[in-house]
Length: 460
Image (cartoon, rainbow, N blue to C red):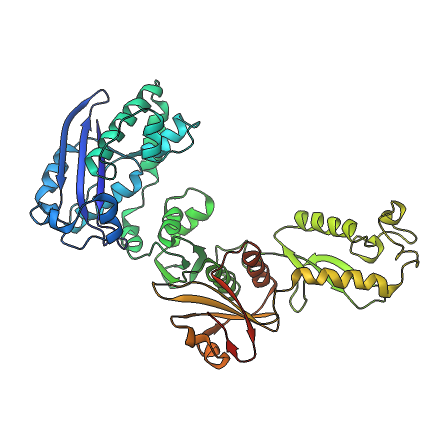
């Protein structure tokens, strides 16, 4: 038996949503055998965007039953059923949360028609409910209302049942979803986590940091750790006791904080990123008459043109640079034996290895490569979204070095450098920071780039 349902909510922060409407169709695999449809008084305000989307407003719900008044009916109609929904994780979580508020453990197997349709209908352009059912010729009315969406899900589910004639895919999906449910001992931890961008810290029972990560949705990422079956997830599940988090709003600041905190705290489970996000680097050694282009593991105190996550990519880029700028293999970490280098023999080197090209001319070509690691201005701010409405974030570059990050609400709070420094959290410059910041600039993933001249900032 299946309980195919759809839920509309008030919207808002995690664990603060309330149900505004619910529709449940009990299905025996062939047909609907029972149904329950009702508006619900959530006893809390509805978010304006949700009201506009669903058409449900507080006035409509004044005389509607509250959840505890329909809870018994929901238990009855879902008894012995697998809960089915389009994006089941959301609907099932909302329903479980409402029952938790009543002190009742609502535990069911669940099945998501999104993942099921992805398995059985991989050719479809979209697996969102509206687009999917329209493409399949399934009628849908009252979109974003519980009854309309639930009825469309019923018709979709019946089609999926027909296509999965052996029911093996269906069985595997139910098993997988049930298997990966979050253990009840972690539910209270997840309830306190935000669904926004930031950095999270996983602690063991004595407070030691086990793992540090960043995500655009902290709660979703931690949930993945707690339901995963890979070795890292299993270690986390075995030792996790508490989660601490810091929201950033800006993805770039989350990335910068993550790499900084991993280096600082050296968590037990962050082995891969404990020291460097980008462990390989290209730099210029100026200690010899002919400057050397070196590919090496990144070391403290050295300035790198660019850094990489692995040596294979680094060597590929280095080889391209050598060819494009007609550089000499002999004066690089790809050094060859005495005499003319391989590139010279193939007319790709202008003779630095044979003395035909002067050190001064050759070194100028290498210096031109240095521009690849330069920020677009000597001093500037990179601004982005903040942690809440009306707030913005910034990172500060001074004299081509990353100084730190901060948040502001009004432009005058960053107008003068002395004020900017007061609002800034200092962070140490390193090759990882530079790579992350340059990548965001190249991809235009920021709100504003503000060059700084003198002591005042033009943030308009």
